[in-house]
Length: 335
Ligand code: SF4
Image (cartoon, rainbow, N blue to C red; front, side):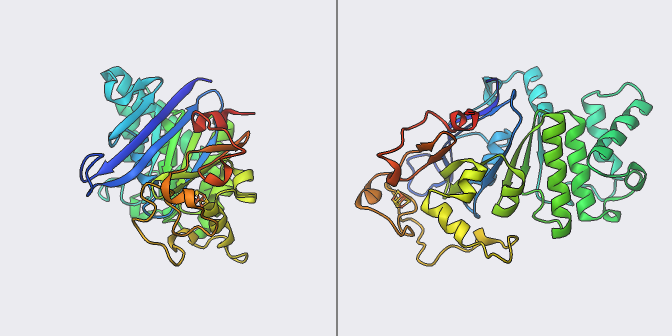
């Protein structure tokens, strides 16, 4: 396994240090490794405040961990040389939620495509640059003649977001971190954009980290899934295993709350009755909502137990049968 990007026991707090009672823990002891030899799509699923956007920002080097490390090709992001940082900026691309906010309304959309070509010296001539840009647009299902020369407001939300995917593609990255890329796009266009991401994974060998609140689209697009609950991993593993037969009581609650008639519902924005912030300190964070909580759950935080070859669950119910893996990477790497 050649590790491209790794989060190693990463914790990020805001508003104080680790021991400050007023600080907010946005992400706690999170580990994940992306294997560059086996391109995959990994969905990070969580409700608002679960830590998923903080995770995206940590992986992109936009914020630093309070403890733990984020490593690019084995080197701490903090210690990268100028050349290594440039390679990191090219190799790991981001797609954000708002496909309009990233455009300057006074520039034609061409600007977001020509800038990286010039910055990373991807082409020697204007004609070669144009060819690269047109190829990238076609790769995400857009017709260059309908896109180039236009202003952002002249494109639909779906077109704008696909131009951003094309922009990421121009740099031939090994990993795209897509943070809620379809949450502001019409439902009818979501499948097309997610299809483009899946295609980039399968045909161009690009790994994708797909961050979402939407379990249905996560299931649609991902190989692996990580369910976050209040800054910690509740359950992670093969998407078929986790979604079809969830082990963690929180994942079970999520799956059960998806109405049969509407997989598009924003099911994660509705905490179950009885949820009280602050409960679970020192013990399991889910204890106040858990229908099968035990005495031990009040006192001790469950580690990740491996319940199957490709699944880990943070729940004391699995303490007797499971062994503790070193990291989620070992779960995702298993055949
Ligand atoms: Fe429920 Fe206990 Fe498992 Fe937490 S550790 S999910 S409280 S059974």
